[in-house]
Length: 64
Image (cartoon, rainbow, N blue to C red):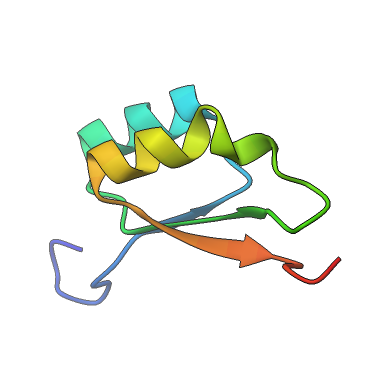
């Protein structure tokens, strides 16, 4: 990122703690995680944290 070769940083299937630690070191722009109509565990803790840190969520397998 310092050399300008990487513009954004994203994480995949990271926990709240990992996301917060990574965001302190380097701003995280996106978190990819399993989220669908059948799997909604993210709504309690992860999504509010992402909103607070202004991190975008990319749902993995949103239709099933």
